[in-house]
Length: 187
Image (cartoon, rainbow, N blue to C red; front, side, top):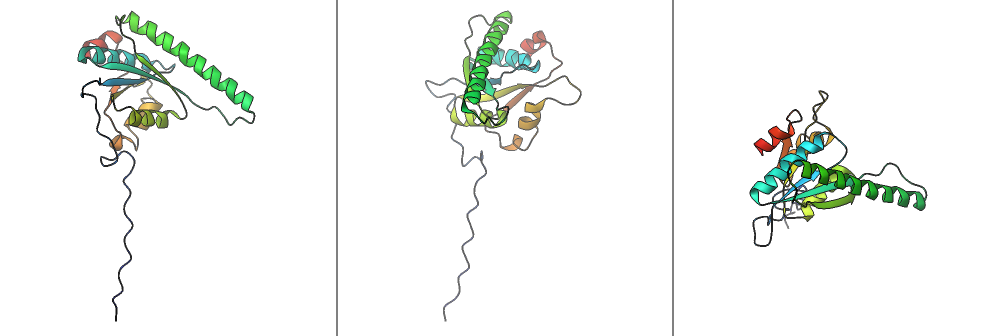
């Protein structure tokens, strides 16, 4: 009589972002430079993250990358309305990049030309996708809010949430109470 064999156990899938599914970063290979990624928007804590990242990039021979994410407001029923909203989002991104370029120059980074990246989608998802796609991104720099209600949505989601233990690169969180001068002295 033949023995019954046990059914094969299903292979365990590796969660996204585990060591076996990630590519090795190339930030120190020839032709590559480590990028410090800053997510820019209209929040006050962005300026803190910008100052820290620009200073670290300059001092370590790295590069600064600025990401602006156009988040969908609602489901559009008409294609024309969606296109107008998308165009407005890209125009706003250009204005934010100009503003942060002025802030960089005011901080003393006159000759620093950051890479400007615009993505469409949900912020946390687009940040993670970009980091997985661009193997030169070595650090994500976020600014924490001074608000007593919490550090801000991005810090809460990325650095304190379920992604924190599996995030593909280190996350630097700049305290919101530090002045620009204090941040530049630390970086």
